Amino acid sequence: MDVRFTKAARKGLKSMPAADQRAMVEKLVRYAETGLGDVIKLGQPGYRLRHGDWRAVFELVDGIYVIRIAHPRDVYR
Image 1 (tube, one colour):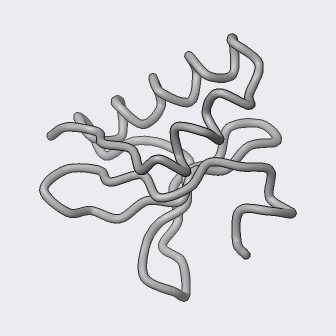
Image 2: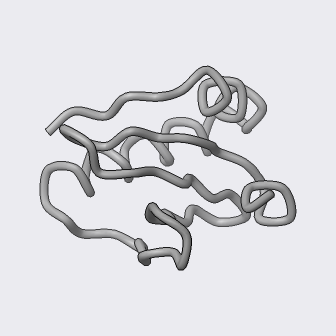
């Protein structure tokens, strides 16, 4: 399973500190490979993965398709 990012998700990833960027990508890859991680299904279509003060919202479409990465106050808008 592969991990793909939208333009908005890549922008959000770049706004994170470098250590958090690496950790978020590692967690997304680990979830894609094993299904393990702090992931919940959202009421709206998609899933949420948490890393500290950051959230990644994604869909499962031929792998993981990351829609947004941002702080919780911004990610669900």
